[in-house]
Image (cartoon, rainbow, N blue to C red; front, side, top):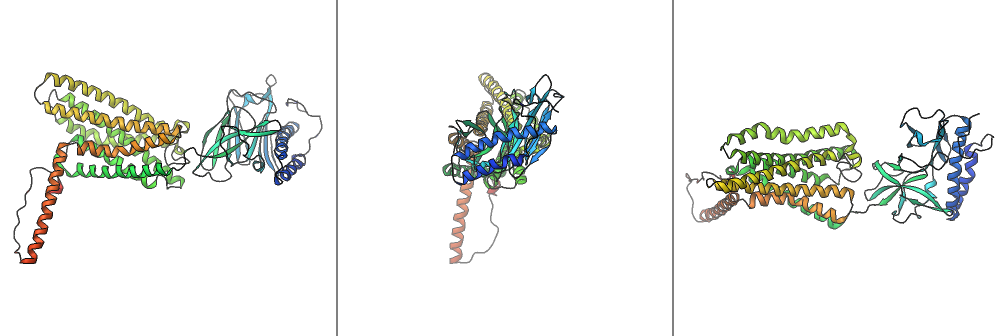
Length: 530
């Protein structure tokens, strides 16, 4: 005979089989529910309590930790008879594709003897009775999308650490829904669902993992998300990113075709623009249209790589400006060439690839969330992006401030080559502004993952759209040399148009003999002029 490990020991008789004891309660609950009788909830609460006591009693009487399966529930109980073998030992229980884990020391009802028991019960159709019409104030309405489960050790327990449970969704989670972990709270013969002392730890469209600080009956509540697909937000996203893509395309053409602009700084701007251009196109085309889990994870890893590459190229820009200013003391222009050949491309594209490869090796399931093809915020995985970004921003700020300080000293002491120094200082201001813009954008992006408000969503989308526009305006439209090239191109284009019109007119009047036609070329300019 096993010692009683329940708070109130039942009489020493063989317990009835679970199906014989619980079947009348399930039948009564179903009948009351079909008649929309409010007493159905009270009967269901009695059913929950009876099932918990019965499953624990069966386990204690039999002395075995074996599963119990009927038409109406699936349950498992685990006994602890010789104390917890290891400090922090965790017990795992599974019933009907749902599971729970709890610390062994939370199960002990007699610490001195080291005995205790825990039961985990999954009910088949009880969620239809314990409907979501009754929810605590502050808990949003919705629908139950999992089995109702019960976790008990047979006595009121204050947990020193939360226990976890994972419930499979009965239907696939919709895009406009958010999974909430709720527990059933009894009050005066009635009850309601509450999120108190429970939080969502992980999950996807098919399951949710929760952590709770108390033992009770639990379920997954699907509530409508705080941010729904707002038409204005979607319009701003697509219009803004389309404008950014257009500006980046024009900037890339300018950097590629204007040979008079070719130098290390322009090469850095070009690579940054290419990475942003590809990332924005992927965001526009595929971000919200991929349903395949593997494809979504691949897109998220590619976006992770591209945005990390953007920040890496910005780091290289800050480093190049710093080295340029430092080398002005000895006017050494070969260092820029060495910098480009030896470090620029391997660092710009290799370091982000290394970070993404390590992230995939550590947590391959961290790419792709329930709503977006991006990094999950669960388990701190998003810091594989936020961490390097914060480090690059801080280092670049040090570079830029040091560069401006050096330029300030040189401008106050030197009279020669002042135009070169002022040009370098202007480049530093532009680069600093871009770092702040990109940094603020992803700072808001991180805030949006934690605070689902429309204001933050609009600010993030607006600043994200400004990046391409910023590059085109600052590095093209506000660059005197580029504007001169644009003017030459417009003049060449208009001259060519007038020449074509005159030629067509003269061909209608008389014949023209073909011959050599002089071609005028500038000593420098863009390829399009040729």
